[in-house]
Image 1 (cartoon, helix red, strand yellow):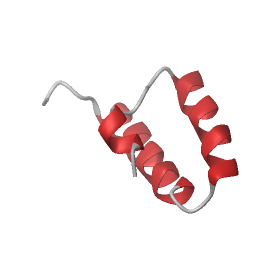
Image 2 (cartoon, rainbow, N blue to C red):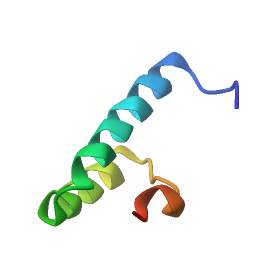
Image 3 (cartoon, rainbow, N blue to C red):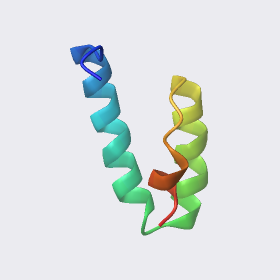
Length: 50
């Protein structure tokens, strides 16, 4: 996966941070899923399932 640009890595790390935050809150979960869908990046289902 070395085809990932630095810009994409930054965006992915932000999404990772978001996913860390939503693990504690269901309400945030809905908001962040919508936000991530808007970025055009959908996390792998395994990452979503907690």
